[in-house]
Picture 1 (spheres, rainbow, N blue to C red):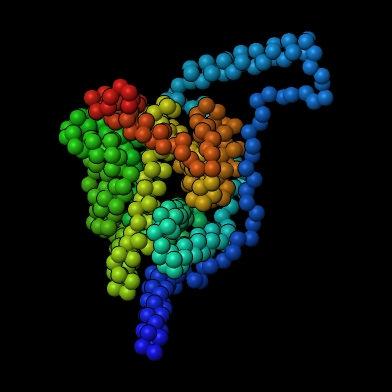
Picture 2: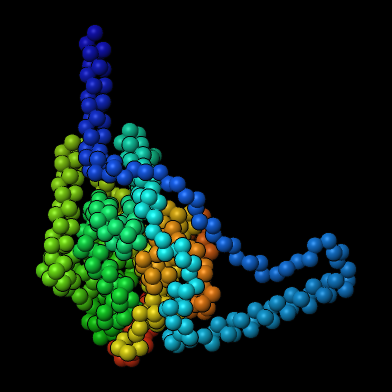
Length: 446
């Protein structure tokens, strides 16, 4: 009888713990978001396929003469490809483009500019459902077999939530400023991002993209600043690489060489009339921190770290890696500008697109970065089509991303190679390129 009573007591405690865990997760994630759980109503965008490089006739028998003709045709194709390659080699990416930003705008279909708030909310709903399902599964299973899967998946979903909040900040989520700000605060606060503080600094980044002195994100270090860094700083920045984990520090202290905080309303990042907005976002951020602390009293700090802390770190790696890759390209000859050589168009053309395989749709096509930088008001669900049409105008100024497999493993060597080469830019000149500190890396690594 005593063993039965003990078993019932343990069962009651197990259910009680899971009930409190579910309640705390509901308080932190789901309760503020239930009014916007809607379902999508539109079809996915059609993605164009690349045309074949060769046309092959059907129904023809291959004779000796046909084989010779085929070889001749192949030779002509190789010759044409060689001409195209030489033309690309002669292309100067820093030359003023022969088109205007109005020409790119005109090439983008009118419907790509239309914002559908219900469609935008549907993406929020799906992401939140995924987050809630992963949380429930992890809390129920509590298995070391499942935890690594959960961390990778949930960290990716945190990143997806960030991208939707990012769209709110740009106003591409909807035409309603109120809706954008409410949804943006919910999404960004839930992943410890001060919505207005980051939104304003990110606006500065877009307005000054590609400018050595005025850009806000992933700004290249001038040579004199770089040479003042001690070896340990260089090692952390380019060898570890620590910057892939540095986003929380960026929010508090900004980029190297710049001062200010995304939480401080009196920071140089903000104008006086933006002070109240920053205070609001900082309060929302603090409320999320308080919610997490309360949740830790229910589930324990270890469980909270497994449920929230590790996915948060994965999200940070996603954010830093993706944004780094969009603004670096050791193999793509990306110029940076100063003074009169800079323009909004030329700066925007220094960004690059990336293909993330199966993650393209999961993180809302953030890889289509060039058109997003030039026209941040275009909703994410129209960026693929807008890019396809704009490429006709951009020509060689658009750098076609390498096609990814299901998982973008190809970007790992791209990232590491860039970190080993893209170190600083010259102190002089209005058009500069990244240069390499040969003493920091061996010739094999470079």
